[in-house]
Image (cartoon, rainbow, N blue to C red; front, side, top):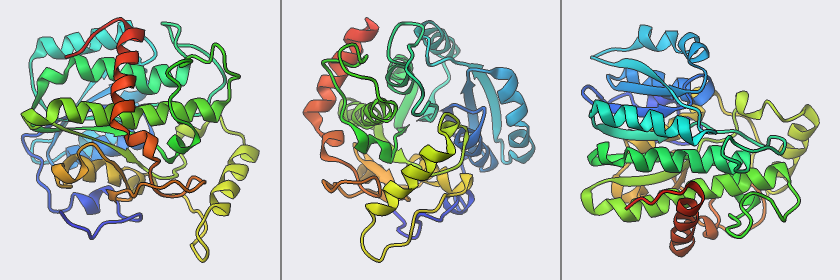
Length: 320
């Protein structure tokens, strides 16, 4: 596995020597930002990409460049998926299963961030329901389509350091709602889901990992005011090691680089069941702050199994 990539690497740099012809990849959230760039980079290197989006019209416009840049058999197909509706999730999964075409990679990219209190169609807290439960049902329903040697890449965030999952009150029914705490819970859930999925599937050659893309200006932050963003950046800089460079935004190609690195380049045994950032496996840290590393609770295998069981109870479906 190459160690030559880092925080400023781009998708095309990471994939420069990679030929993805014949590979089939499923990516959620291809109507903007990281999802579009991830799909573009994969298709440009020959992958057959199936992109999912809630708004297909928006996705069609946003992905026009992907078809233009696809080479070596690369392509893009769009499918409808609303992660905030389990009915939509199940219909999407059923259609993919009916098609019967296997995948080499699933990238759970779509998500929402720090939004006002609300619920999904099924009554779940909207960030946990969209970011975790929607993907939990989708990925598990189509897991049989994953070839031996394939991978699941869950997009998490340094925001997981805001909060562990709360298995007693996942919907904030007894806890005052805080946007970033809810976001933190959902991002921790993304890591824990990867940990347990990896444990359950690695014997058949399927590995799972979670990645932090870094700070990028995308639609994900549309609910944050300039004052909140400024306060967040100040908080990140305050937790910096002495002498470290101040926070700076990544470009979108830099933000999607760790995703494609984990999906197509990194050694599977090295990243399986782990959390990655800046194109490397992150260190486990217990220090406060949001800059660098993963909290131990996000990789706790017992916590991961407990979340899996709680998630099954919430969605009313068991996955073996």
